[in-house]
Length: 67
Image 1 (cartoon, rainbow, N blue to C red):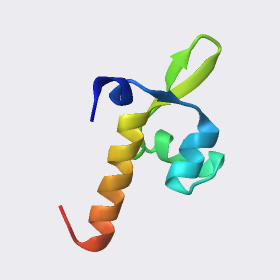
Image 2: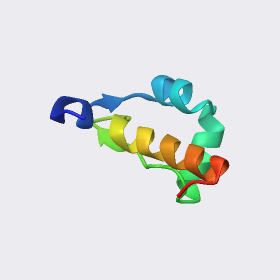
Image 3: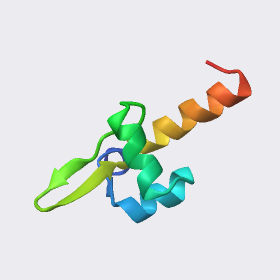
Image 4: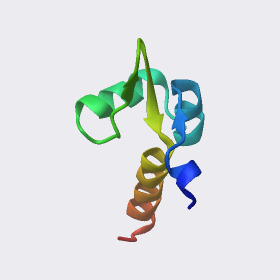
């Protein structure tokens, strides 16, 4: 993955679309430390795209019996 993609910040609607979870489910998992926490962008928040993608890959691997 290139450096630009690694540093890309995405907002909640895109996070939700990528992982198939709603806002409440995402924030519950953040509270449980099972989902990447957002970073502060002034008054707003965003997620590092690579962290969200890795989380998704981990979920797929766990479901498929991978490591």
